[in-house]
Image (cartoon, rainbow, N blue to C red):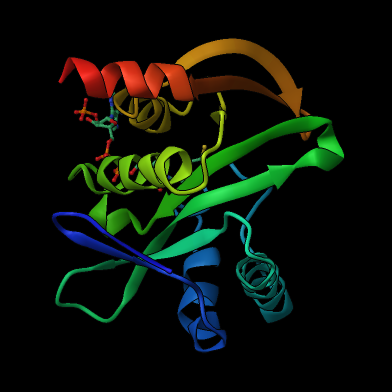
Length: 176
Ligand SMILES: CC(C)(COP(=O)(O)OP(=O)(O)OC[C@H]1O[C@@H](n2cnc3c(N)ncnc32)[C@H](O)[C@@H]1OP(=O)(O)O)[C@@H](O)C(=O)NCCC(=O)NCCS
C-alpha cells in the first residue's frame, strides 16, 4: 500500500527499515511526548513487526514517510490501535525527524492518511491522542479538521482526544 502527496510518498514498512527506524526512535526530539527513546534494537523490530502484521492482516496500518525523489525514511504517519486502553477508535499518529519540522510535511501526510481512512477504509471516525502541551501536534490535528472532544488520562498522562467523523469529513469536502 502506498499513498502520495505533493511532496511525500507514504510507504508500507519493510524488514529492511529497522536500521533507519532505530536511529529515529533513539532521537529524543523524534520521541518527544512519548514514553521515551528506544534504547534497544528489539524495540524497533517489535514496532516494524507489529505494523507489518497489520498490513498482512489487511487492516489500517502505519506508513513510512519519504520525501519524493529521496530514499531515506524521515518519519512515520498512519494508524494505531489502543483497545487495551478501552479506546475503540483508530488513531492517526505521527513523528518526524526534527530537521524537517515546521514545513507542513506532517500536515500533508496526516491529511492523506485521514482521507485514506474515510475513502478507502470507510471508517466512521478517527482520533488523535495528544498531550495538551504538544502545540505542534495540536496544530497538525486542527489543520486535519479535528476538534478536541475530551481530555482523558492515557498511559498516565493528560491527553486530549481530537476527533473527526466521516460526516464532518464529507461536509468539508462538499464545501470546498
Ligand atoms: C508533531 C510533528 C509530527 C509535527 O510535524 P511537522 O511536519 O513539523 O508539522 P507541520 O509543519 O505540518 O505543522 C506544525 C505546526 O505547529 C506550529 N508550531 C510548531 N512549533 C510551535 C510553537 N512552539 N508554538 C506554536 N506553534 C508551533 C507550526 O507553526 C505549524 O503550524 P502552522 O502551519 O499553523 O504554522 C513534529 O513536531 C514531531 O515529530 N514532534 C515530535 C513527535 C510528536 O510529538 N508526535 C506527535 C505525538 S501526538
